[in-house]
Image (tube, rainbow, N blue to C red; front, top):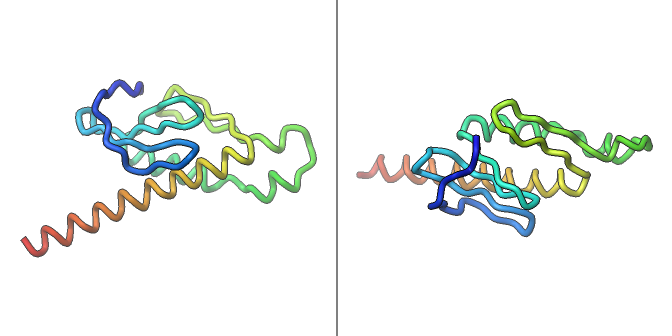
Length: 116
């Protein structure tokens, strides 16, 4: 799914990337490592789960040449993520912050509807 939305609302941003919301296409757009890709909300949470399941301790402890790289290929996007240990940490931070902001927004909307 291509990120073709022109009006993006920033959800969360770090020094390594950002997550935006596109209401027009009903997708979330990740801008990470100089590339953008879009996800539906359930796909983003699934991708976040996959990123969080990467075992950083095992990557650090393993001395083989391929151990310091994680490859993720979500089936719902055309992007292949080839991540170093530092990029995994940065992506985890970005996705965790975005998920927290989405959940916070949902809780605020529930409270506002309760008192409306």
